[in-house]
Length: 195
Image (cartoon, rainbow, N blue to C red; front, side, top):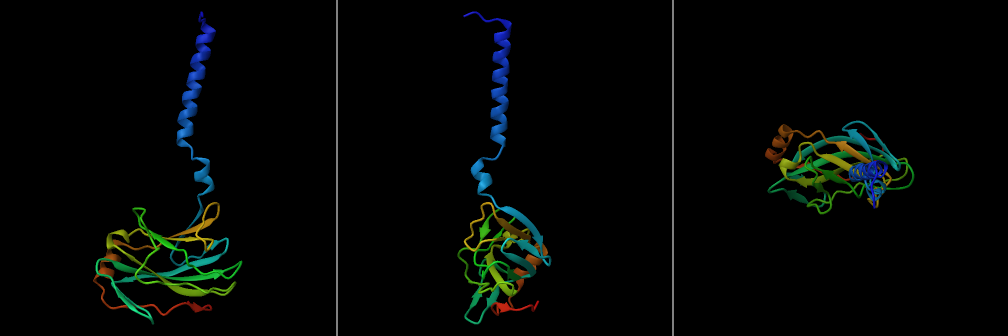
């Protein structure tokens, strides 16, 4: 087979296009990554965040090595309890906040198995529910942490909204929380507009 200039140029163009296509496809997200990813709604303490299923406001963040509830008392030996006071108002159907997590700045998730089980339910449509969410974390993981709240109770976030609320914890606040031995009282959920 004899190569002429046109055939050689065509071969170079085809190989170049294949190389560019391969480079582009390795940097683009895969279809599964896009369809299973949530739509992130960023938020901060004190500002309402609208999700498809309701509105969430983080009212405040506190911490201690000791928390108490009507049922028990817990002491963290190696960590700190991060207590997040929230107001949740479901808009579509009765729905609590059962599937929530805190993500540290390093990307580690906290939420499944906790020493203190905190509930934010039952929440009725249109009625605000104020409650405290409790997460035990290593002190080094708390600064820069973010509360993650999916729109759906199931925790399935693909193609749906998910709130990412910056908790505003600093090295100084965490240092004070780890030295704190007086308990934070966890009274349980309260329905109504009480802040």
